[in-house]
Image 1 (tube, rainbow, N blue to C red):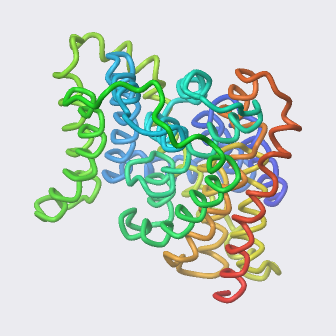
Image 2 (image 1 turned 30 degrees about the horizontal axis):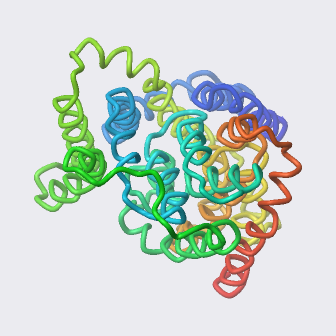
Length: 393
């Protein structure tokens, strides 16, 4: 009965997450609770989740981040930055999707796709443009400390995001090199249609970097007992600067937040931890201790497959981390990096991934062509992970 509930909960999580990840996490947690223990224990898990100050603050942080992106996009500040990138075609094809990738929104690849379409001076196939758009749009998720997927994943693993980044840096560099080799190096190095850099065009970069800088500074002061308070100060400061440099009024923030699904992003945090707390209350953890499963299978193979099947990062993390903690104990920084990078690689080639779907539609190609374009680079990126995992496990 317990395992039936767990399997059903995971299936519901994977199916519903295609439309609404927050709803999927809540539904999976509730279903798991119904099958494994009485309503009082589900209620206790809910209280444990919604009364935790660190979870509440993290949800606020993750809810504010897309609003910052919405203000930058709606005010035209991100367009001004990309338009004034006085760089060659190769650098433009890397930086334009990467910078716009810092604006977390469902299907946000539609923002960078037109730039790649009009910024190309070299004849490039549609499948390569889709590959560049998806690969480089998400590559900063590996190292940007305020990427919602990375923040949420680090929190559920009980790790500090800034300590994780050095371990993810090799994967980031490898991904850049592989992407450059397969899709960028044959492009022209000549400057394209971009306008000269101005002070105003650099404002979005300052706003984007202000949040992690303020977060680190406030945390270093040691004035707050809850770590996430410093992060909330950082993102609030970024939002304030972005807002005051725009022509928006306070009431406009509501519509921007609604358009950017800010509540949904915040709900994902509560859903992730509710699912984790319900899972921890069941007898599944004690039973998993005797289940024959190796760390390399769990973190690399299952991580990659779940990333591909769900088209998400948070869903596989929500499933794998609790199992790993029960079966193998503490999740080290290197182990987390191996798991996260494996999930990332499955995520960027998934047909369920919204950015893949909208990019394929925009450039009018089939998923088969996209998959064939991405297959070898993805395998080459995954192989070193398998080798490292083999030696450390």
